[in-house]
Length: 198
Ligand SMILES: [Mg+2]
Image: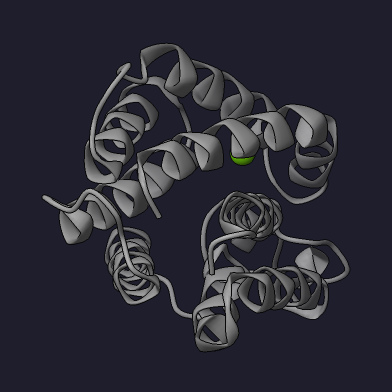
């Protein structure tokens, strides 16, 4: 994964967030505060605007992280920002990330999510997309993206144990977790950016 692919990943993700903003907001309206789509859309628009002209994959990811942390309200900005920042730290100094480097960066991002969100898989959060995606990653990024989507779908039957949705208790069952859906979009964008090189 080189700089051009990293940039393409961020552009594809921003485009996908834009296309799915209403869906994400509708999902958040059901079990949260109806701002996930608009928060993520504002955040990813700012990410693209602030992205430096040049830089290693790590430098681009770090720029994206700082923008998300400073510009996106709610829980999602700090969470995605932390994941991007940990991934950037893992990838630091490399011009071209091997599939193994990408896997390590994603794993570092996932650890950041666990620490920052104090959640575990099964709590009906974005971890429920990330965990199966990382599990499938040895089979390639396309398999990871598919697993992330399946994982997001599986949040429908889960009881929310973290965040605003947890206040709903049993009423959180029957709805997809919005963060798991935006995470599935992230892995799909990554797979698309890397499609021809892995
Ligand atoms: Mg929200």
